[in-house]
Image (cartoon, rainbow, N blue to C red; front, side, top):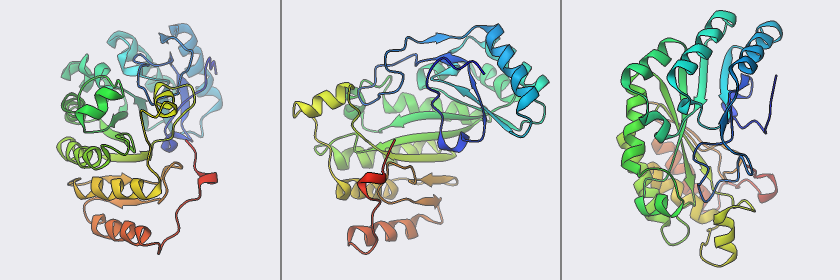
Length: 289
């Protein structure tokens, strides 16, 4: 396989065929993000991608999912995406799902007919970042689009039949906007109704604008108690008719897997017990991005 950069993929895609179709991220301005450092976004050549699909057909018959890497494959023009997905369908007929990262800007550029076409060709899962439902927090983090725009694009993806996995970041509002960020994020998730939510905990990455702001004293990241309280507030304000709310990423202090809506009350009780010191938290040395 022709990997030209560090491949970044969701934990759930660990056993997938990782097909790198883009290098870098089309936005690459988020203040908190250290991924794709020093890389200019570009779409890889069709012949390279075709060769990788052929290699997977020969050597990866024990893998049943395909994940398109790296940032924002959905921003690729529709004819090229259709060509790649058609080739995957032809040469890897045993695979059951294609997944990809997509930001709201890329999704907005696709018509509903185009999204439905991608779904028909095997695109079954999109991972997208909401990060926060708080307008002020997203502006400060240089995220493209406001929460309303991101929520709308998530709803369009679901309307096309594609499942949506949304990530949110505990701590992104800092100490000052902690509760506002948490409550607004839960409310945004309620409006979007994604199939899956992944709550990660912000970790300040050297070299990012947010890390520099923290070094200057302009941003303050709270500790474990703040993160637990944010998680609680976020869950309180998240009303999902179905789906799973994950807070079990390696960055989190209290791993949770919440089947919504029936598991919500038990999860809130578990958070309360952790806040009371009755449940041990994940130690700092084991937490990681």
